[in-house]
Length: 129
Image (tube, rainbow, N blue to C red; front, side):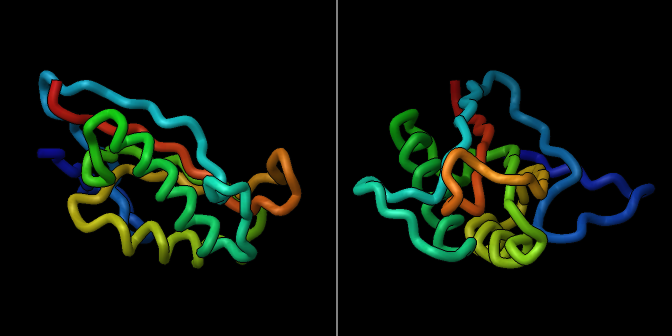
């Protein structure tokens, strides 16, 4: 099981994430490339929340191929194109990850490969060797 680390001498996390996560000994790591909010048929929904749900569904598919699930995620890096996308993204992420929370970073970027994309998510997962 993953061990969440929250340092007591720094400000508590702003949302549902951990300051750090200890990966159990003898785990294998899976590094998921950034996933965009695009469906298998190429459809890109409007809105950050809908795209974020697809980002995580795509990550879940990669994890499934490796015999893992979202519960194996230890680190999330997410990128949104504007400040107004922060809350919708975090609402989706927070609904998917109960404690112990993965470590997480969220950044605002100028854009992605196509203008309709507003969020991209990459992840690191750890599972049994």
